[in-house]
Amino acid sequence: MNITELVNWNYEQKCRKAVQALEKNGFTAIYCPAKQQAADYILQEARDAQTVGFGGSMSVAGLAVAEKLAEMGKELLIHGKPGLKPEEVLNIMRRQLTSDLFLAGTGALTLSGCLVNIDMTGNRVGSMFFGPKKVIVVAGRNKIVDNVEEAVKRIKRYAAPPNAKRLNKNTPCAKTGFCHDCNSPDRICRIMTVVERKPPLTDLRILVVNEDMGL
Ligand code: SF4
Image (cartoon, rainbow, N blue to C red; front, side, top):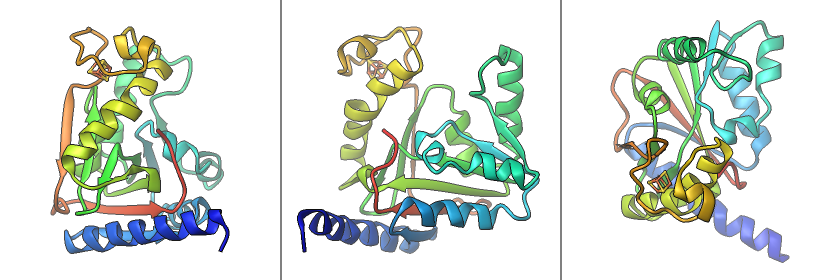
């Protein structure tokens, strides 16, 4: 085995362990060797959906499924589309809560099978555990951590600062790259969720992908 194969093998063990733990916690979890399998799964599961909500995930954006879903005749609920007025953004976010299929990434996934996220508005995490008929969460291998404490550290160290910069937020982390536990009006870290077991009224599926995805 060369180095790439060894790295992939090692990550595969972690991904499979996370899948097992998620299943033990009641979720439907699927190991995907690469992004393509995750994209194929989403397109297959979208067959009966009329509306598809997008939580604003870079992992999902990396699958390039939006165009194909539009070609399939789905109504796409994307609040991050350029040129939308604030009231239009809010309306789309509200409609995502009752979409037929909601697609999201996750800030972190623990080896014990928990999804950990930190949101600013809460629309993404809200839609993740109640409302949509079906939810598919995509988790790249880089999101896997040991436990919830590590998950929060990961999000604050590696996800939130570049996300704040990407979203043009006026936060200290968007300037320095480090979390300052700020009190900025633009603070994006406001709502932390830990989904420990499958929410009983939500068809929540998690695709664990053996590739780095998102932040
Ligand atoms: S708490 Fe503030 S400084 Fe820390 S990551 Fe969140 S937005 Fe950035």
